[in-house]
Image 1 (tube, rainbow, N blue to C red):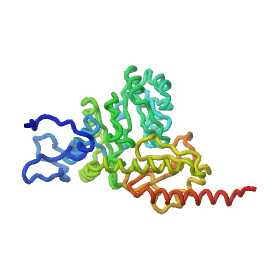
Image 2 (tube, rainbow, N blue to C red; image 1 turned 180 degrees about the horizontal axis):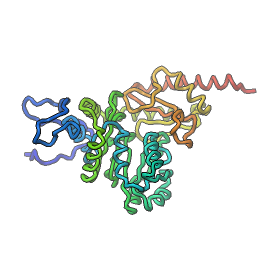
Image 3 (cartoon, one colour; image 1 turned 90 degrees about the vertical axis):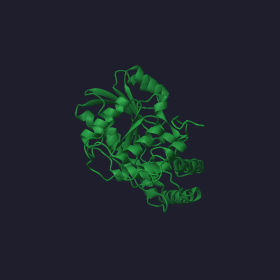
Image 4 (tube, rainbow, N blue to C red; image 1 turned 135 degrees about the vertical axis):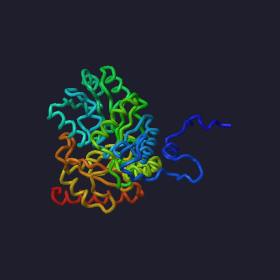
Length: 369
């Protein structure tokens, strides 16, 4: 007979479903309910709503099990980023990719402008350059794939290089999710998520999370959350966990569709480039007509929705250089596509019709002579 106290070696698809549940006893609900409480009876661990909530705990237990560490939930992805950057000592140097989520870049630049840290931006795909930049650094922060350039880092190599110089390593794993990539297994110290995206998956939650390999880092992040008040609501934690339950199957479907779309779009005459890291459900396309063509594209579709967020069941896209904070090395005509759960043929037909229309507009303005 199997000892019920022995941990099971479960696959991610199973962990996403079974972790963070109440005990299997009579009349227990299958899900941890929404705990709408600001104050608790004194004498326990919770005491006050800013310090803890059972709805947070259920979410944290599940995402922590998937990533292989201890999870701390935050009010938003950028709150999670901010808490991690708070671990950098005053005057410390952060090495980060030149192509990163604009909210992260704005956080880094704001802290640098205030004299709290210094920042060195690098090409995260150039492992030698990253290794050299890590000398004397306090933290290596990166995304893989990067947003929106979709560049992939050699996670074990750059992590080892950073650790050799005594730097902490933090990775934003929002695009890949723990279903496709587990950076803690490669030696990374901290994994960050915008749970708004794939984790919750339905465009109705604003939430973030950090998963730490070292419990001491998780304790420090919990302190930052309590002091700063960047706490998630109980309802959003409940919804994020409900979304997390279906993450593996959602991502499997979206990735299959993304892979097929990449193959079908490769030779479209309106495109200069199709970027795809080989996994996940984010594609970046670069339109031959630059910003004007990209702006025209996002206004022509019926299924694809022009929106700045991603990772939901619906397919969204956006010209990233419309944001002033986006890196100037990102092409003006780059459109980031977040592939949802619609049928691949419908998504392809809608996108190609729009691309053909953009190409036709360009031809009518500049006919061949």
